[in-house]
Length: 163
Image 1: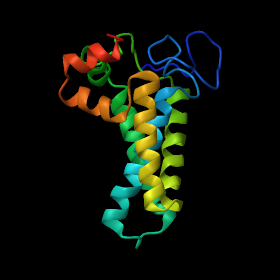
Image 2: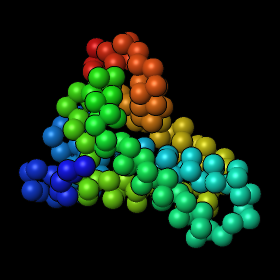
Image 3: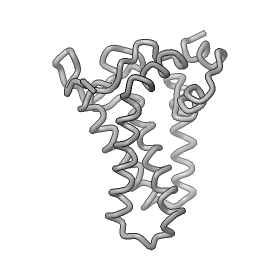
């Protein structure tokens, strides 16, 4: 799909502290990397619902990685990029670098293992703290992303843009 391996700047950064800058979704990690941990938690839960721990951990992990990779491909297709631009505050979004997609998958895998090894109450607490923390810190989170992609609300977009 024509994705560049690295950022157009040619610089590799471990962290980008912006949600809508030219390096967002281009580097190793940014605020949205945290939401990919929640993807991993959700994937663990969905696989657990189907398998009820009857499948080997390696196979479940492979399914989770495949599902996250499928999301990364879908997230970076022109339809989804244009949807993000039109429906969310990410008007300058032009897709992830391959580096960022790779590490988003690693963050998802980290979430998968958090859900695997933490007690259910701790996993739920992690989700709540993450979603509330992201909403307060950057006016965005996984829940808002899902809402805005499915059915955009102008009031949410206005709030996300600082209004």
